[in-house]
Image 1: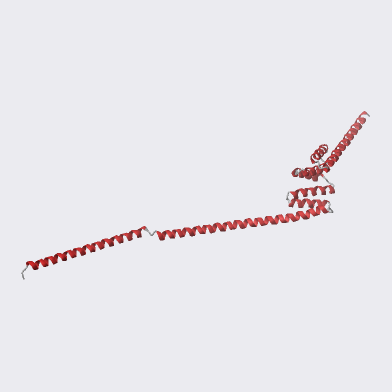
Image 2: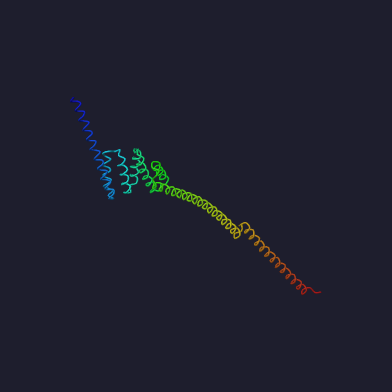
Length: 240
């Protein structure tokens, strides 16, 4: 009999503790909601975290904490809370809200492909949500534009590379042509040394030959003059 009373007391105590914890969790969530609505996001975050300390599997606390973190520009931390909540939550309407907010964060970070997937998941859980449907259409358009811009950039880069190669080839051809012209100019301005030396030798030989001819002619003239003198002298000396 005493043992049965002891068991009943323990069960009653556990039930009382559980009810008290649930009440404390709800109080923290409600207080966090009031602060969130008043845009006091830091204090709202504190209360949602206290609620999670009491019940670590509270998807409501996770979702609300994710919202207040997002308002503080803590997008990575907010995404972690949404992902954790989506792994636990079974209610379709709540899942639709979670995936919708995940899509908003992906879209804000220009990760349009993941945004599209998140909005689709939201609509699978709540096909009648027109806001999510609008966001999906917008994200799909922005994804298409992003892909087109990326394709254009890739094409421009390829064209720039081809143009650079052509410019380099043209520069190389110009350099070769310039080198050839310079070589031809040098050939014209500076004839081979051997030819110059031959020309110089020919000129010297001609001068030597001319001098020799002139000397020979002088010698001949001298002889003629001598002969004339002798002949004249002979006439004077010899009696005819």
